[in-house]
Image (cartoon, rainbow, N blue to C red):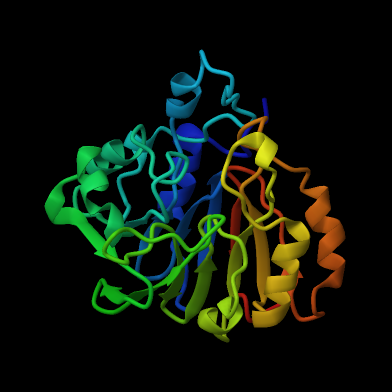
Length: 286
């Protein structure tokens, strides 16, 4: 079992005591595709999986979800969250064992989900008046404009939609003060994706676990594909995700280290450990 760098009360204390200055952010990787991000004006949680719900669900099946990394924090301890972003329905991104506890612990936080999944989000026990549905191209602002979120469609194998044409999977372009963040959710690269993301991204989070039909799960970019996409929209910092959570659906991050040699020289690859804080002004490489 991989132990987080920090966990429990120690991690929560670090999060709550970290007050980024304007023009900076602090990031903690919580495992899989989950990140907690603090800017000068907001605390954001993206795709948190902080339970054992999938391990329990699949324990007696032919697809056991054996955890590789210990959960870094009980979601009931996260009392400072302003906005939770969930990219799609899969439980390691929209977790029924995590989200209701966050809703109770952070009673003012808003849950931003694909509009196609509003009913599903409510069925998890989230307060309906705190769920906001968005779709590709939608832009929403929070906390007096200090946080701006633009949704992009995602291709978790395909660019799937519901019967109303609303996308089932999303990525997010997040402007937290002066810092622009791209979080892919689960996706393959799709035609025109880099142009839709646009320029000026300071930190990008891209999956690297790839696609293997034998695993019986929807695919993502692998490390080489993530590097190829990043080389098109050229973020300042590139961080890989979606590995080291379940034994049947992971990849050696060394593949990303090797692939990152092909990045443009202005792109800095960063591999985080679960529970590790990464705090920086992306524009200051010194």
